[in-house]
Length: 340
Image (cartoon, rainbow, N blue to C red; front, side, top):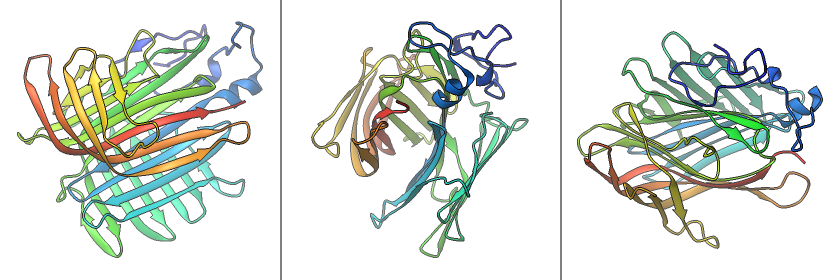
């Protein structure tokens, strides 16, 4: 199966099976007025990123591998919820560095190396296993494993139209048990022992050149020891289809339309996240953030990814009320001009 058909068309909506390599080169990209664009513009306007990490009793971690405007970048951070210490690194990958970002969300290798960072993310198709390894200044920092297959996890694979003529492929998971190790300040922690759960967001396509979204992700366990995952968004991937999803022990259900209420002048104040159905009512409290903010040049960005904890309620389609109490996760506000 290929995402782009031989005629250059796509089947919009949800796919329950892997889509393989994202063959974006086969898409006949047009401008806003339906005029065909040259191959050089197709390469320049293509956006692709992986964002993944884990939450746990002790740590919250996030890692991004991004290709935008033909520039690869990477960042990683890990927050110690006990000591309140934040370790963070990020860089643009230079011409003499290594930059391989895999376009198959389920099979292959991404590798970014530069400025003392080595980030490797490997996926295996037959087992749907994923492995993220991070080395900082020669020191092994994270070796995390998770898989969607053993539990029969219902991965979200979604392709909505985007803007006048574009599209976005989004593949998302949250609430998956993670194994492996994390090493901070010379001390190694076993991920399973600290109840680590993983999330992964794979996005690729031709997004709006100036893109805004709010997004949040919860990954952890509820009071009944069930694996809980939420992926909620507003401002992107809502044209006829929605990426908003709830997982309970890997079983996925739709979450409706989502609203985010927060203080524009102080994003660290509590956020309110609610759904149009009334089934979701959450409050997010921030412990810290990874940010990028610059208003100059042709590609300005206002990126704030906050990490912290959620409390509130989620009502499943069965009518069951899931109580969310201090579950860790992420809230994000992003405005980016990807290309001028």
